[in-house]
Amino acid sequence: MSTRVKTWITIIAIVGMLVYVSWRQADSLRPLTPIRGLGEALALVGLAGWAAARIQLGKSFSIRAKATELVTKGIYSKIRNPVYVFGTVLIAGIILWIGSPVWLLVLLGVLPMQVIRARKEAQVLEAKFGEAYRAYRARTWF
Image 1 (tube, rainbow, N blue to C red):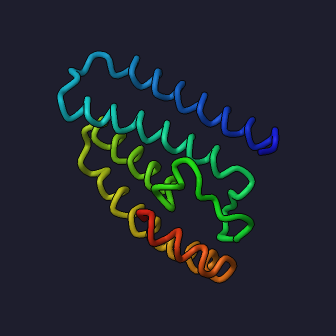
Image 2 (image 1 turned 60 degrees about the horizontal axis):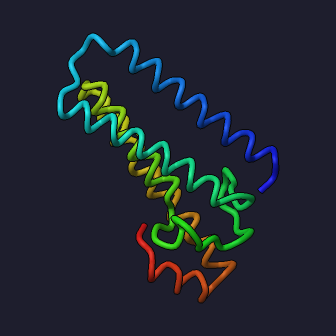
């Protein structure tokens, strides 16, 4: 993985943690209910999982679907699209933590977009890697 990619991942993780600490500080007057606590835990797991998946993806990361390498190690040995999965967990956690059900509309908008993006990526990877991708897909989730 290039130094530039590692630098950006580090910056994103640091900013994420700073946002978390700021929210925690600003939010200290509201009681931490079980739902809000669950949201906080999900947000932290989502952020950590997203960062780990992004790091493991390395040079294969791209905004548009392209097939440079079939990444099948680490988190990718169990989940085909962990960046999408953990990103969704992060968003769900933030929504629960905020405690405003109206934000569930954001999650309802994100879910279909993640599925569509995953399907496009699957088509590109299958076209490039054929049977190797089909075997990988058969042994992994989403």
